[in-house]
Amino acid sequence: MSYTKTPNAFYKPLAIGAPVPFQSLPVTLERMIHFVPPHIEKIRSKIPDMVKQVDVILGNLEDAIPADAKDAARSGFIELADKNEFGGTGLWTRVNCLNSPWFLDDVTQIVSKVGNKLDVIMLPKVEGPWDIHYLDQLLAQLEAKHNVNTPILIHAILETAQGVNNIQEIAGASPRMHGMSLGPADLAASRGMKTTRVGGGHPFYGVLEDPTETGLRTLFQQDLWHYTVAKMVDACMGHGIKAFYGPFGDFSDSDACRAQFRNAFLQGCLGTWTLHPSQIKIAKDVFSPEPGEVLFAKKILEAMPDGTGAVMIDGKMQDDATWKQAKVIVDLAKLVAEKDPDLATSYEF
Ligand code: GLV
Ligand code: MG
Image (cartoon, rainbow, N blue to C red; front, side, top):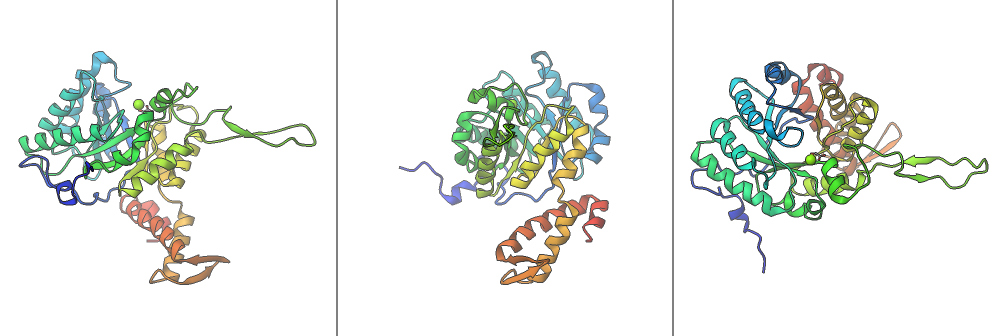
């Protein structure tokens, strides 16, 4: 007995009058999802400036917002969504989790008041496809009721052990799925990891060098998140959705932040969260392909116009598979170039 929908039912709106689901995701540049606490007036006043600096602005309603500020954060988000024009910058919110006392009001009030401005709802603590199905149905009903024209997408945070176990089913739960982010803090707690950090490495997680003649042995630190990021990238790319790194909590260590972001980028992630203004530039640098790489990738595409065969470039063998890798980089570079004239010049477009 299979409980999977037939393909034609999968793409039907879940409520009469709701917009038709996307068959493939809109192509958008989302190098950084910049988190803001919407209950703070001073932060709301900075939104027009922020819109010019980041690819996505996210109004955070969940963790880090105190319980007594939840209502103010929700109404602050509605106000900032209503008052500002976002142009090509994405507008997202992270709602409270499904079993919290705030989730229902978060979704119903936000969609009813600013549903036509909202691109994506980030859903925390997703455990399985049932969580996505519930929000999917609710959103369809609200979209129909409030005349929302474009489907609001769902982005899941991968931050429970159960969520990791069900990752394939979550990724494929609905055409509304935009992607996933790693939530290393909640995931560490859920898994019983012995850390007290928000993302990043740990000095004791490593491989000890074999015994040496001098007796000195180096511990090579390893990436605690390698397994989960790799698993997330495969699940997302296999379903045509996007993978993202999440938060990096040590704002004083920009080098470690850059290294963590870069591992995620090289493994296939398309962006990251930025929690502090200082992380915006790091994310922009890391998630925009490096100009030298882009120029080399362009050479590969030019040398193999139909994408087949084998050629040598600068002593390195290229074939159909390197052509595909080059295309990933050049396609991303084109998207970045549309937004960033300086990088367009370095990429020689
Ligand atoms: C993010 O929400 C995390 O738990 O790391
Ligand atoms: Mg979390």
